[in-house]
Picture 1 (cartoon, rainbow, N blue to C red):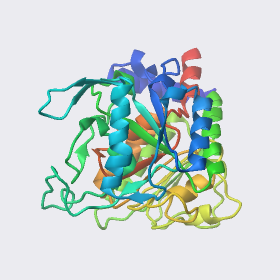
Picture 2 (cartoon, rainbow, N blue to C red; picture 1 turned 60 degrees about the vertical axis):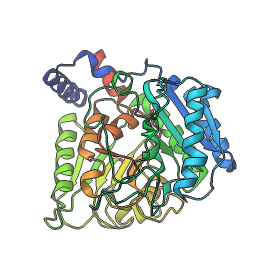
Picture 3 (spheres, helix red, strand yellow; picture 1 turned 90 degrees about the horizontal axis):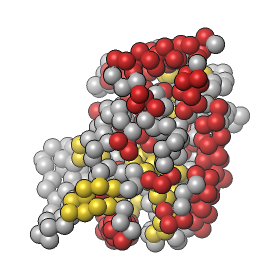
Picture 4 (cartoon, helix red, strand yellow; picture 1 turned 90 degrees about the vertical axis):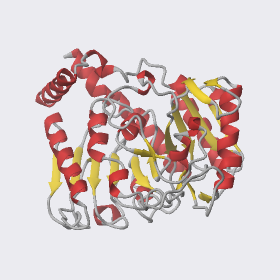
Length: 397
């Protein structure tokens, strides 16, 4: 078919240019993804317990990789709560279960030299974000906007759990940014790819898990809708560049694309049918077709709207962007819990590129973000590979 032919040619061209034809299937399903995944849930939240069991069963994750923590039931917590109820207990579990190989000198923080765990699924009920604190022992803030801030996403802090760092102000450089390697082949054992299975309703979380797994069997089919802002003010050109690049990627892959070049977002009555992919900006809260009562994404869809506080809460189906998009049937989304600054948020063009190449949702997301210990949150099944079936068809052809 022409659709597959275009996709195959695009894959081969990229692979040949990069010199890794054989490794393009590196994130393939035969890898023991479940063995390198842990599931985190909050013992104090009944839905969290049940959802953790549900996800582990669906993905074949061993019971001893399902970790219950007793932590706050609030979305926003203090730095002390994060340390004492999440980070410290989890580090101890990694040590006790020998998931980390440690070099401990006694005088300095332990150094992780190898890790058996690469993926973390944080279940609804695990706190979402950490509020700022005036001072923190061992932290060295810098007198610049980024370097002086110490609020953060819980998930982004967990991504660097292995660093054992007291430096909480500013962002940590992501060594996986723009990588082309599956995380199992990556040479930095300190990185954890943390994604969140979360939504306003527990039933929605169950649905996004089931939809992701079902979609992998056939591949993600449908239309892509890309909504550019086309604004030259406030340094926003970068976002439009990303969205323009995505449009080109999708055309090359044979994905039908609707690209809106008007400054306004897609209007409320726009017939956004069969939506499998959505990328857009720039509105402060959910708007356009997504506000219509009968709008639904197709199962397995991925939807991202670039905005500073797109995921400040995941408990209100009408607040910000991520929660509404997930509530409307998207299986995955990306967002920020606090202001990240555009250059430090997810580079959605890289994210889309890696998805099309068959990497997992978690790998694609973390390959596309330059900063950790910062503001990002990745909502969706970390092991989800929407285009894995496409690669298998290409190989057969």
